[in-house]
Length: 491
Image (cartoon, rainbow, N blue to C red):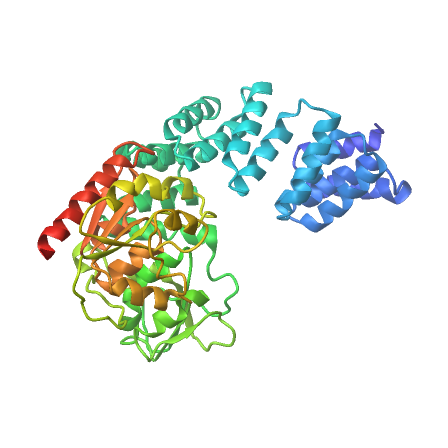
């Protein structure tokens, strides 16, 4: 290595990126094909957030020295940060073919698998990385993430504890330890773990989530505002964010997070019309007809487009902005006006849903199979219908259940079906949010750490929770009690 390159590397390692960059460019001015200078200049670009330039430079280094595993490893990192998972995976495998014992590369493969929700593959890659390098906090934390998402919370907690022995101040380790305790139902310990993460935005948000679970809205709602540092719902908006103060102009309300969240918060849309001259609500296309039915004065759109507005807010900020500080202040009367078919003679008609969107990070925890809910289907005197639409419809076919949502175009059509049922039994998806918002009695089947939305935000919701992670039988038994109670009342 040349003396000039060594000097640049010293600057680079000290974080003096501008000095290092100047020397790398000087080297390339005289030797444009120097692979190490190309590679290191690409690493500087990556550190500065210039992902495209990093990919370009490190690719040139790989082309000139394809046998250097480190170049492939760092090109994988650049592709990963650019969102190019396939290319990142390809470069990881290229690095491992040249040098199989690379824990950093295996860790990156584990993270890529997590991004793809392939948690078993992630588990394998990260276990290999830790076999090569046991004292590897990043891999320990990433393995905890994968384990938490498949409900292996006790194992996740153990890996976080190991990571904290190596770095007692790691906010990622504390946050994932909090998630593990939350999944185990150890709420007090989860709160302490999230608090140990300091001002780490995800941990602040998760702590707010737990406070809402305890109906501490005064503390929980402000903490949930930390989500904006993570998701940035107003990143493309030019006008200022509404702070809950003076009103009277035109407000733009932005959808964020899931469809169920927007249904949950849509109770506040009509009250906003009392404060603003115009209210525009941007929601995903499947919700537009449903939300427009709340009040004809709402301007409901699928995208911002040229919507006129003076202020904006994220939909999940509405309770805080509207001064909701206690569970008793939450409006819970059904607020979605959809046509209701007249009650008919015959057995109670109950809808059942067992699975949600498989792309959701924690879907393995919240979703199950129809087979696990089969004891419900065996209850005599009930006409069961499937409310699942999507990848698990074949399960309904196997049990011979009618599927009235097959022809549903959107959530308005879904609401019409739900409004005609005597009860809905569902895992945690948008379906129970919709049925509860309609006032249809709802049993929600939940994991040990059930969502705060079911506690005080809806009427006529029975929480049927697991008693240990992944074991659905106790939740099903609780739903059985609610169903038999409905049958007795209808007799």
